[in-house]
Length: 346
Image 1 (cartoon, rainbow, N blue to C red):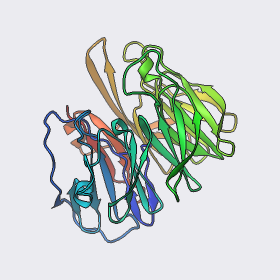
Image 2 (cartoon, helix red, strand yellow):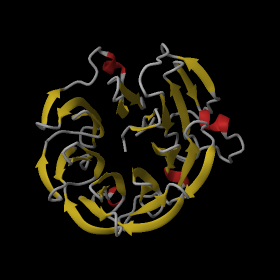
Image 3 (cartoon, rainbow, N blue to C red):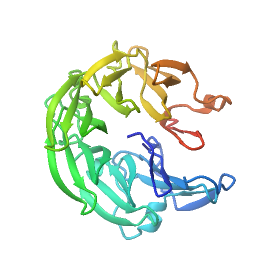
């Protein structure tokens, strides 16, 4: 789940979470379990959760939580779409809502599944090679694509962003960006794209592409840091970009871009992977893998985006964070401030 962001449309809350690969090949039948006390207040009615699944095993799936009933339904997409060949597909990468539609990006199946927000029934499949993440603005959807095959390649081609008309669900325009583009944000008529260069290791990309949405052309590349991944934009127009580092000597980090100048304005020296921005607070976690120590270092925190200062080194205060082995997704309910963290475990 998800740009790792929360989208609210007509009272539906979509959490963009991802759940890591499982060792077994169990196929989950759709089941509903009551897991919480029903809530009838507030505008948020529930959330969808996208499970990544095993690469190459067609194990991506979608779950649904309903605040009104307190029920959590596993694998609802398969139940509502029994005639779809191969069910949802191979490697769920992003899920977002816009209008009355839900968009699920299925990376290794090279497609975007568009489903009805209320019924979870398929509306259309949009083919996009090696698709990664989505962003939306003024009736258009933007999807980042690695362009080439799913494979480490020092000669991997440049990626692109495709523009989709959300009314017709047709691809209208494409623009070339950097290598292996990841998450994106829209601000003031421009699309900002984090380029990772992950397939070209150790020659990572280190730029953010700036796309003018009117002309759909790349007008600038901002030098930021290697192996960029996540993006969030605050109420003042500052963009937060996370870097995964090189897993050796260059650590994960968090950078800030000033959208008034389209320049990098600060380096926060914080390891960050997943982020969720609510009410000027940036909730984050980091899982830093090191090939030197062959171990992960896991951290959490909350950043005040007004001061750019850490106000807490915890996002969970009741001790349940100790049960999380590998955090793999993070969202914050903007109404209740409930925090959702998914655990990859293995």
